[in-house]
Amino acid sequence: MRIVVTGSLGHISKPLTKELVQKGHTVTVISSKAERQEDIEAMGAKAAIGSMGDAGFLSATFKGADVVYVMETLGHGSFFDPQLDIMDAISQIGHNYKQAIEQSGVKRVVHLSSIGAHTDKGNGILAFHHNVESILNQLPNDVSIKFMRPVGFYYNMFAFIKTIKEQAAIISNYGGDEREPWVSPLDIAAVIAEEMEKPFNGREIRYIASDEVSPNEVAKILGEAVGIPDLKWSIIPDEQLLNGLLAAGMNPQTAKGFVEMNAARRGGVLYEDYYRNRPTLGSIKLTDFAKEFAAVYHQQ
Image (cartoon, rainbow, N blue to C red; front, side):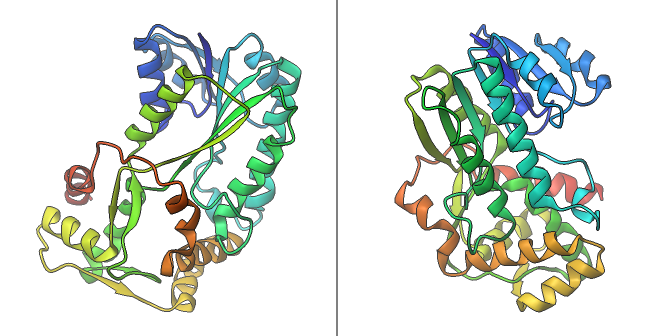
C-alpha cells in the first residue's frame, strides 16, 4: 500500500515507518525539517518536507495514498509560549487535515488521538483531542477513520526526574494505589501498523495501553531502577501544582489544562471510557521502561 505518515521521525512515527517499510509498503513521511530528509530516506521511505499548517501541501502529499496516518503536534516549547492558544492551534491542524483529506480523495485514515477524547469536559488539556476527533468526524461517510486512543506515555515520566533528584520524591496532584494505564510508543506503533492492514469500516475507536500500575507502584519500580528503593509518590493540592507550573513559565491555559487533566485521574474519571473498551495490553511493561528511565536519570 501507499501510506503517508505524519509526525516526522518522532517517538511513534519512526518505529511505525520502520515497520511499514519492512512489510513492503511504500511510505512517505512528512516532516517540517529538511535536515530529516536523509534519515527518512535511509529508512527506505520518501520524505515530504512541509508543514501541518499548509493544507495545500498536505493535500498534494496525501493524493494517491491508500492510507494516511495523521497526528497533531506543536513546536518545541509551545507549552511555554504565553501568546499561544493551544486549543485553537491544534484545532487548526485538525481543520487542515480535514481539508487535505477531502481534496486528496483519501478514503482511509488512521488518526492518533488520546485517552480523554471521549469528552470535551473535565479532561483538561486533553480536550483538544476531542475537538480534532469532532472535526474529522465531519468528513463524508465514505471516509473511514480509525481513532487510536493511547493512554499516558511512559516517556512523560521523564518529567519526574527533577523532583526525584531535588526532593527524592515524585510530586503531583494525584497518586495512591489506584491503577492507571500507561503505554510505550513502540506498542502504539505496532497497533497502528496492524490497524492499517485490517479492513476499514466507518468510524472506529481503539484504545492502546502497555501496562496498568498505580502511582505508588510507579514510584517503587522507578525508585528501584535509579537506586532509591524508598522513593515515594507525594500528592499536593491542585493549586500548588498550578502555581509551580506557572512559576516555571508554562502558558497559563496549558498549566490549568494539565492540572485539570491530572485531577481527572483521581477516582478514574479520565479512564471511564477506556475501561468500557479495555484493550489487550501491549508487550512493553513499566519494568522494561524503568531501565530506559534509569539511563536517562543517571545521564542528567
